[in-house]
Image 1: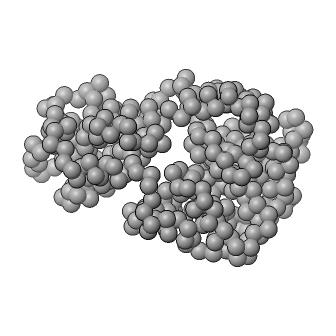
Image 2: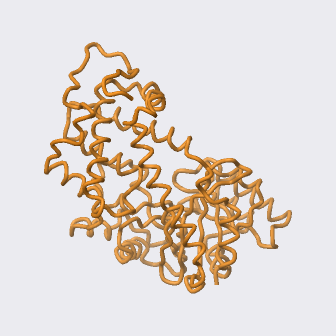
Image 3: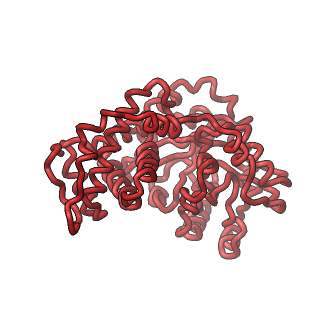
Length: 393
């Protein structure tokens, strides 16, 4: 998009003064406050107050005796603090299986290690995700898997750069215009978002060595624009964030599937290491049931995927009765999909549904209608923990 060429925007009664947000000036006069804001966003150091926020749960569940947590994201929160939070939240647990699944980054929790990897299904013709779980002792020969993860880890970084380029580069003007028309963002909001996206790019250059690789993802732009919006009360921040969300969807839609390893390749490598494979996100991926992948089970519920829970339980029960691949029964899982960085943020600035998520908190196991379907499937938290632990060794 050229510097002075107007973009299609929602009608406004008067043209705003956009001179302060000329794109060419985004790399100039970067103040100390700008730099401090950036460094605070990418920092992985926790203050004493934040550490206290991590170890203090929002509620306690003394009646829960089994803890199944095989889909959650520590992000940069120290494991020892997460362990204290879990122990405080579920003080009377007698049986547990806890495995972290960071995006494209293998992490360990005691006896077990796990990861959530981005890949693609050729039959499904879209990006999918798989949860991979391992007995940590079996990872000595995981060189190929680690190379696959290192390649895929770069996906989220490259997507952030494409996200930013779509907002500021003339070559992607049509995509930005599509997002503007979708959200009704006015000229002022568009100029604000473009200016601070370009400034973020400059800050990333200035502080490349101080920026942890795990922070180079789409969320960085969203959090930076939000911080800048709070310092410009005249800006319609909600509209700016909607614009970012619309652009991000376009970028994800157009991202080449050829970047990823095929799901079958990932599964084959995981099996060679004695690992387990679970399909997460039922609302997004339930048609993958038809692919007959060699997996251990499917996630039938998580906080953002509730609609098909009973359907998925029935589908898995039917598949098990018909006979399973390699003679292994498909297991029924539920995932909390908790992102621990949410616990150190201002609750007023976090979506309530995300704030409610907790490692091991899956109330659907005890919901009346769902528990009836689980009984017919002869499945319970305790049984799944025992069976999956046995498979992982």
